[in-house]
Amino acid sequence: MRERRSVQEARRAREFEAFVAGAGGRLLQTATLLTAEAPEDNPRARRLLTRALAHTYACWDRLRGEDPYNHARECLAVRFARGTWHRYGGLPFGRARPAGPLAALSPQHRLVLVLRLYEGVAEEQVAALLGLPGERIHLICDRATTALLHPPRGPAPARVGAKAAAS
Image (tube, rainbow, N blue to C red; front, side, top):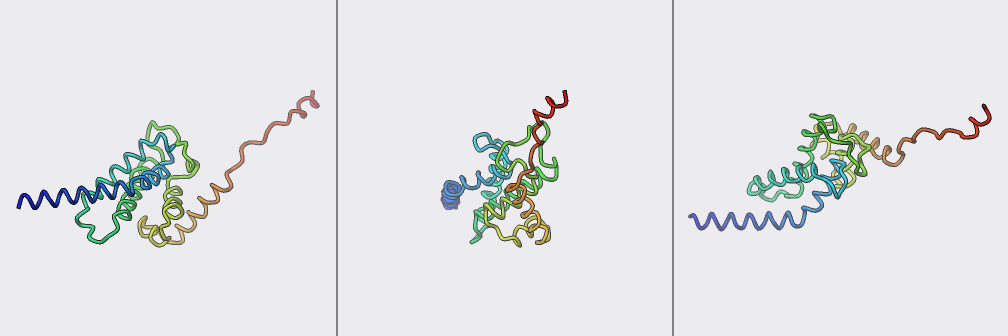
């Protein structure tokens, strides 16, 4: 009995290690996009991924035919939404504004955009995961895409010739 259990635990650990070896990089990239950190300096993304993978490992035997990548991605998204978006309004206390490519977006916009465009999750699935109507997900994704493609302009440069003419 004890031998059988240790064999099962070893098999489970090998399966999970193989899963992490194959999917860990992409999940880390997803977490990094969500937290809007720079890829080379992403401690929040690594913590988020570690917690999501720990939860996935704890549920490993209960997945039974379910896609472990999908489970880990959902866990990542839910943990991000609960931890960052609700509690801190996007930024944890004492942390500088993120510098990643999606830093200009709000956490909610980043979450929807990453799930829809980077991960390719269907609009209906994102809506169900976040508990929002499908139309709202569509609107958030459109606004996030527009904000990335057409960032707001900075202030207009001062006219140098205008000062000289006024003097």
